[in-house]
Length: 166
Image (cartoon, rainbow, N blue to C red; front, side):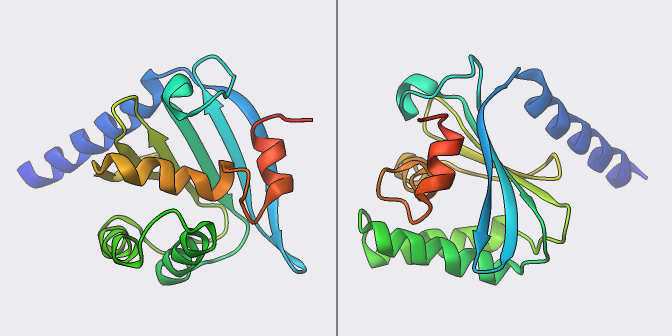
């Protein structure tokens, strides 16, 4: 009984952390791969503007999935994007991939994965509003958000939509 109460309190606290911060959408769009729509994405800040990570944090990225994707598929795609961007070492990417194995879960159609980049550089992950963990490696935040927001992203149309660029 005590364990169940603790779990309920932890869930409520997680929901409140995300809800306590008022976020305004900067931009949103959909990501497609070939014929499939994989997810809808939304970028939000407290003032609804994105300048850069330092100026705009806390920064919230939400991905709402349109199909089932396994945790491993998502981690593999994340590492692939880091490799394409080329800003981090293979060793660093593999360390982060191992960490993500402990934080992420499989997603099913309709699930929302959110990443919250805090001003101190930590990233908190949420699945359907429930906190799944924190990455406190300050280099991780920029590397993760770069997948969508860096000018060299593999999804330039989505980037323009997220940052509300012309």
